[in-house]
Image (cartoon, rainbow, N blue to C red):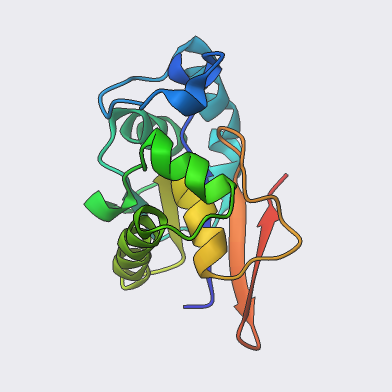
Length: 170
């Protein structure tokens, strides 16, 4: 596989909490009005991508985002548990660049999710979470790209000569 796409789910009420990095984001939280609008606004961009398979976190916010952005796509859709989000403790350790057991375990889980996704017919679109994006950037040794990604920003990951790159799609 030489490329894949990534989308972080649309905004939820938890994303706009003042101390959201201190509060675990339950898996069943839906998108808020802004999050739904974000997903709808990028649907035309997603419709133009050469996506053959969508692999998605099982969390409600990712599922809702997937359904909104893929409304015109007739592709296989697969839920992958290993693309679920980390908790606040792991997030804080990751962004502090702490290589704790928690962070390494989460990255190992995300790597399994990535391997499962990339074993499908590609190009693949992964719909998941900010922590998953951060872990992907760490796993793939991404440089020159912000590891913390906003809601519903399409990212194109590609590899050339053994070096992975990530770039925002506009």
